[in-house]
Length: 124
Image (tube, rainbow, N blue to C red; front, side):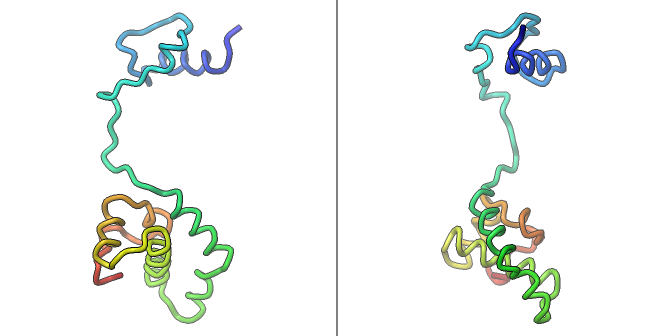
């Protein structure tokens, strides 16, 4: 009987979802299952999201988004404000450095919904 890891491994191999160099129909050894091929791992836009998401959840509990909307902030202004608050909390730096960090490393815009293309140090 196959354990869950073997079952998943075999499914990945059958669907050509894993780069093992050649198809294997037998259950993998522990060594084979733990192999990672650096040349097959590519992702063009890797971003941090842990601290950003955690602080967004805190702001949700504080109902800050609703408060900003109630005092007249537009949806986009609310998203920018949340982006700024979260960014400065997670990565306290100057406006210029914060804008760079958001564009290059952070997933804060994915969390708040603010378009990353609009991030500049002047906006912050």
